[in-house]
Image 1: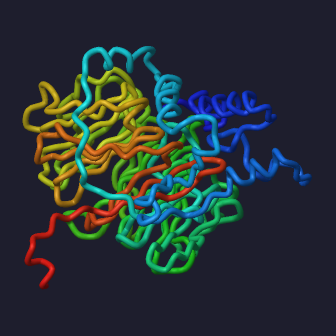
Image 2: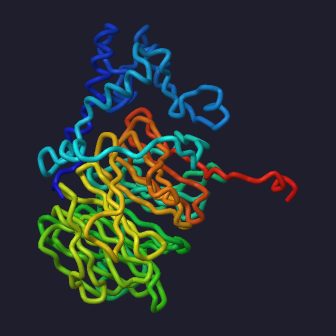
Image 3: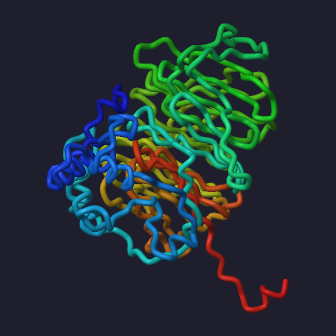
Length: 455
């Protein structure tokens, strides 16, 4: 992956430029807050007519399902006070958004070859938009920063902190603050007892009671959520190009929990979560951006800074098969519960679904609207696959309908991550924006029968 942080990314400027232009047309010197123009703290203390209008435009509150049904924008954007409609701005956004590519024009080539699946699916419905939660992103290509461990419990990155949000109690709490000094409270071989300071978190994974955060300099920090303090700290590498790109936590067939860490130094490392010992270290010819283990743990997807992905034996790191078809670098992968279907997400704006038994071509090519497929989740019941673009769109495809029908969830802002709860009842989407940052919650739709009301 590219060794650049978010502030160096051109993809983020489009929304800011557009709203600055709107402001100029209105005779104002500032954007109306949507996108990345500025936050309220950058305004002066003096209040004039323009300031009052700005404050009214950016006075954003939570949105409930009932309010959305009454016509309120789910993000609280007051379109009636802007000189552009939501529909027109969506059109402009689609025209102007610049998808980041490592291979020039990879997305354009796919646009000519692939058609999008039909819209119209209704699998999840909007439930709540929470403004108290402020997701953030460190690196523009890494978007696995939101994790739901139940339908009420969500963990996410907000600046230097790992935060926990309870949708049940409405409480937001800090789990780890990486701005200060973080050191392990347990002693394990290979642990850096001195810990870390000012760690920049590039990726996150949370499963059941275990949390692993990966850092920009190869840091790994492990925590048991039911215990105070941090259990383990280590540096996977001291290589100059040491970003931890992804973490995959999974249950070992031999018992216990393990995790895989994918790194920009071309390495993939496996640790156990009991004693935090390094079990395997595999090396590949290119930086590894994401890995995921099949349910039977016989195969592992490995994708990174290469057009082709790999299927690898996780016991020895040997390549079993090569995945050919993507036109750019890949940053996401996931396995279906059936154990042979899996998906890869790429900067060519596609998510490709594969059958491990027949790899000559993908069984489906799912094309996005404006950017890379940066995060992929299969539902636990195997009925849906969720694909998140870098901004504005999350797509839910019906697997029962051969991926040919989708629900398009449409909003404005960069996506820090998407996560389904383990029971598939809730889907959470983190939105990063200087003014409209929030956590979207969608709930699973159920087609109850007539007699269900009696039970």
